[in-house]
Length: 343
Ligand code: DOR
Ligand code: ZN
Image 1 (cartoon, protein in one colour):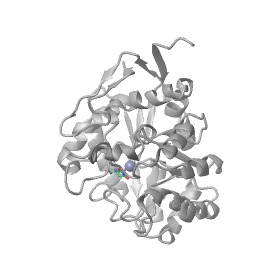
Image 2 (tube, rainbow, N blue to C red):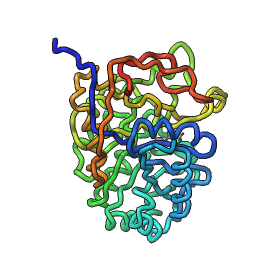
Image 3 (spheres, helix red, strand yellow):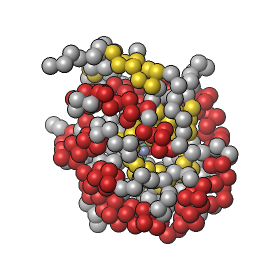
């Protein structure tokens, strides 16, 4: 057996999908992301959502104010699409650097998506403008039709919505966010170079049994919901394949303990504090440690057309003990010891 590396040094990574929230929660969680990543694509599903250039600029300033003085972290903002989004505002914000992408939430698909898009038909002028400007479209890829089984909503979205979108917008850069199924993984892998996907740590580690292990487990509940083991394994294969179409996006989505442990709990897993350590466990299990740097630090930047980060981070085989609680939030892997530790 080849000897195990004791340390790993990689180019500084980016998180291409994170929820930093606002107010007290922003103060509590932003430093964790700032410690692990050089940049992050910040989701706009606040209440009210980030729908204008002015709102994005104000939110960006609040994020920077929540970080320590010496943080070397750049938030990349996103525009929340609604049925009424103005194409000119979207392109103006992109061209002046106020935001890096637009996020498409199908209305009522997830947390704070009530103002989301009810039909792609309503945003065609926006998509035309984005395609012309070279601005990426980030998609929460689930249909919301209550007649569709919740475990099938991503696969049905790929077939009914995403496949036609690629035909209608052949030059539009599209990121299918937080993929969870074999169908999504193979569709993205086989798709054009304009199509990519982010992958979360939880969808690499867990299958849907984790939701019901000895009782109902609200801290394993996120959207898209965990799927069968064979889907998790397909997502693991995609992440560790070396394909430039797959890159790191934690979907870290903190909710207060009382909002998770209740009769109708919120979807979301807070994985930011030990995100790199969590991904590394999977890459090591898959014998793909040598592919982690590209997944974490290269593929996303290249897809977005942004420069790679300068500088490096080092992880050691020191072991990281994940606490049961971080403030008022239960983190992913609570109470576990992870093999790797960010130096
Ligand atoms: O689990 C999730 N939580 N999935 C989402 O799509 C949204 C996120 C949140 O904002 O809480
Ligand atoms: Zn998300």
